[in-house]
Length: 311
Ligand code: NAD
Ligand code: UDP
Ligand code: UDP
Image 1 (cartoon, rainbow, N blue to C red):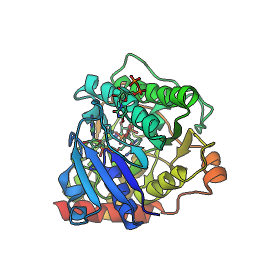
Image 2 (spheres, protein in one colour):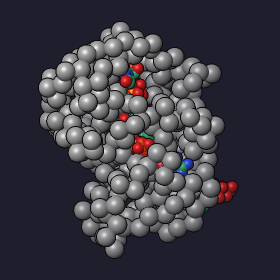
Image 3 (cartoon, protein in one colour):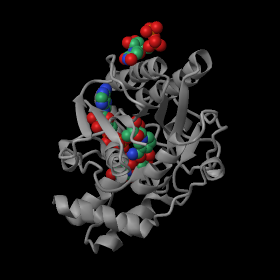
């Protein structure tokens, strides 16, 4: 059955893929965005579809619309953008959550929160499972994002307990793919852009820190599967790829796949940069029957082709 679905942050990297997928499945999509990090280019191909609507709105302000489901993705995700106006980042997570929960409460509908592996901070437990409470510096430069997302989770669970709001919380681990912004400073976009232009690959620290990278189509699949679970399933559920690599290995891989002449250059490690990160996805496998399908080589090749088309 066709649903009217609100996607906040719908002009961003993940949001635009989600809007596209929901439209492909025959739904009506309201894409809400203030275009802080989102781009019209991400959604321009959808605007000819009469079932696609764009609302320019800041999620920190109340919103009165009539919809059947909400995916709450609005929030800058890359450190350089979320640290540019940290107060706004915290407000986006917290006031945005309150408004979307208030909307879901009034309409008695499901609301999914795009939470993050950052709620685990620099983890002392490895791999990270949902039962781990995290190791976050509340005063550091990443706190506007990490603590904002942690408090948003608190709000989701309190609205669930206090007002019976139907919530779904997913903890997204590093995700990459076409439509990442080439200027957002994230490791995959930086390295590919540098490699394609034969510029030095900028490694922060010694490159031994690890991340686990999930391709965007796998992430979108899991988001939709989580939304489709019964009302008794709230999460939080980790969604990500378990293939953990060092940042140095990623640099070498991207140089090899692009045939680049780039060399490695070393730069200081930013404050509070997590040393290692890998999701434990046992719960996602069990409850959703989901696991990532796209291998690193294929995902990186697609992403490289996207960035090549931008240069
Ligand atoms: P993105 O920056 O590309 O998208 C975020 C979107 O939200 C942008 O379009 C931006 O303009 C919009 N936005 C920001 N503040 C807003 C506000 N106050 N009002 C309305 N719109 C606003 O980032 P993304 O990678 O697509 O991330 C989407 C969501 O997933 C975010 O909530 C992020 O925290 C979460 N997430 C992403 C990753 C990842 O690896 N990409 C990892 C963990 C969590
Ligand atoms: N809200 C909204 N759209 C709605 C319903 C509520 O944006 O359709 C906002 C509302 O402005 C409020 C917030 O969500 O600030 C929380 O709503 P709730 O009902 O929990 O709180 P209350 O209105 O009682 O303060
Ligand atoms: N990083 C890097 N060079 C870059 C950008 C990032 O070495 O040009 C490192 C960064 O310090 C971190 C990892 O790559 O250890 C992932 O960074 P990103 O900002 O992509 O994601 P997050 O730290 O939020 O997981």
